Image (cartoon, rainbow, N blue to C red; front, side):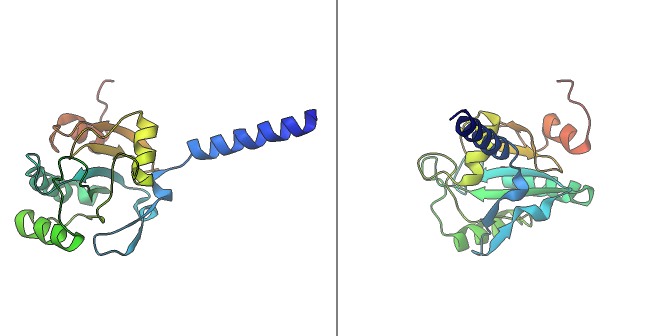
Length: 179
């Protein structure tokens, strides 16, 4: 009996350890064209994950997100947009409409994924992981999660935090924020 309890405890510990060691690179999502997209291809890069929306007061952040991506992409940095319709239905379009909107209005060239849910009963597994690991909730469109080169969460900032905020720039450039 003691042996059985020990084995159950050991299995539970191993399962918990494995879940806690999950990284961003272990997820596969669909891109905006509906193709499977392995996030493991970003090993060695810093990634800014942003839930986006086309009809939000913060939508103009697309412009600075694109500028940020263009400024730092040669330094192993990428922005990834995850359109979501969770907040006041501010992303009502289809994936095709979202892709067209982003390109036409903001010249977005960074990767945009298929529309997902970032909260609620149908929250996407990636966002389940992001929010659980950071003990956060996605408060609105354009919340930003910073993922390090090893696929670990380095931090997150609120939606109103602009892409060129010192917290984000210092993280990209590898400078200490003094925290």
